[in-house]
Image (cartoon, rainbow, N blue to C red):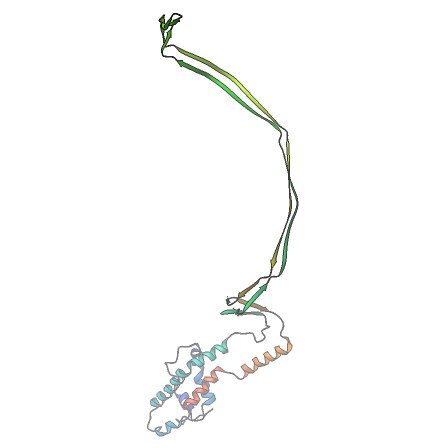
Length: 293
């Protein structure tokens, strides 16, 4: 068995895969299968020309270390790609999805409306206000108003007299020009007069209402206003609308036989020619073998 054939290394050693592969789901899936898959599908491939320079001198351990290192670098470089491919191939989906579902459209940002220029309003013509007619007012009073006055208690009037009254009784004679003295008297006044008036009277006044008062006011006023002025407004304001709402549209219906057939055909073509294990196997062959696939 020739050492430069890939089959040699896959037959004589447990695995050519390195132990420090990335800790991803796809690695755990391919690890049990990749060595056998390479041996029976690509075992006759020649190793890269690099081996021929030292094949006779190099030990199997050295060559196997080189193989594992090359595969390690391959997985490090394409780990993210392998992971994405594996996720896509294992994703559950309905190949005949019948266009039922919801579409959500989100509007965000700001809409701006700008108004510029001048708006002009012109008022012309005459407005007339005519107030005519008669307002009448009638008031009717009926019933009796009664007023009562009560006088109670006692009024007292006191007069105080004091001083002296003098009475002169002198007389004149026909034969004597002088006044002849006669008797005279003086009266000392010290009397006091008290008048008392006792009140116990009641006075009642009554007023009978039965009259009617009618009044009227006649209006004949007319007012006219003449319009001929112009109002101009300068517009330079900005109106902003903030949009943050969502529009959810629900669609339902049958996509039809033609479209269903196309979807099914694409689905079958995808899976008939696609193998995740084969993708990685070909990358390994192109890395360590001479023949390019």
